[in-house]
Amino acid sequence: MGFENWDEVRTAFQVARLGTVSGAAEVLGVHHATVIRHIDALERRLGARLFQRHARGYTPTEAGRDLLLVAQTTEEQFSQLSSRIKGNGETVAGELVVTSVPGFSSLITPVLTSFQERHPAVVVRYLTDLRLFRLEYGEAHVAIRAGSTPEEPDNVVQPLARLRTALYAAPAYAAAHGLPAGPEEFERHRFVGADIPRAPYHRWLRDQVSPDQITFRGTESAALADAVRQGAGLGFLPVREATGTDLIEILPPRPEWESPIWIVTHVDLHRTLKVQNFLSHLKEAAKDWVDV
Image 1 (cartoon, rainbow, N blue to C red):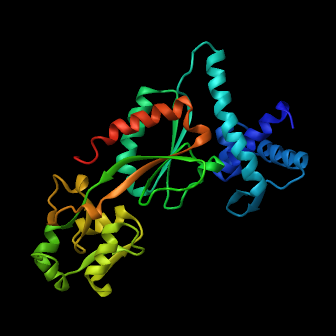
Image 2: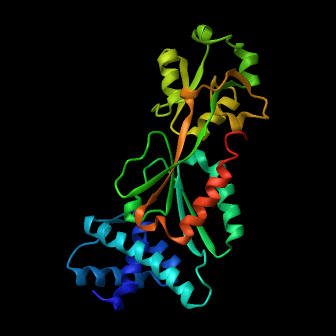
């Protein structure tokens, strides 16, 4: 397969990244029939099925993922080469794909916005999901993750910050139920907690109270924080979100409740100008996160 097939490879890359023919057609500025034709031609040329077709879209097969990892890296290299050939030197441009869990959006969105103001040729794609995005398959340039140290091979992992968390109550809850003086009075209270307690503070809570006291449960941190603010029960919020509000601190932050935040990049893209510029911008912004 030679350079003349690059359009087909680029098309396959966009279909894999976006999951749909229509999404790839929009990004590439072509008709959806052209996208289908490119995929069919590439599969015939390679003699392998690159995608599983289903009602919700296209999912890469193992062969598709192998090809697309090469396509992601090559796309980045072509972008940098194009900038140099045009006489602009290396410029920060093109699409920047960043992923995190939804609960980090209040932190990450301002960073992406200020980065785009500094580099207006960048198109931002911010993917928020609880699932783990696969950097080795070109799903993103940068992943921002919380919890235990990521250990996937071929990824570059760097510590970013440690977010402090405390236990809070809303004034509405205090008015209806009173407030505990400490954990010894927890048995008379209701709590907001995670269905699956991944975070250290939610695991701590499970050890302190009976299951029937966790009366409001959810899967996403922003929804749980909203429940605490509405008075559904005592619950945890990052200190940066609770500071300056009318929430009442029940227990102050503890070191064992802190959530380590990591930056993850794939080794093939880590040294590209765009990624390095964004990492520097992100690290600078994160210096203010703990004290906000």
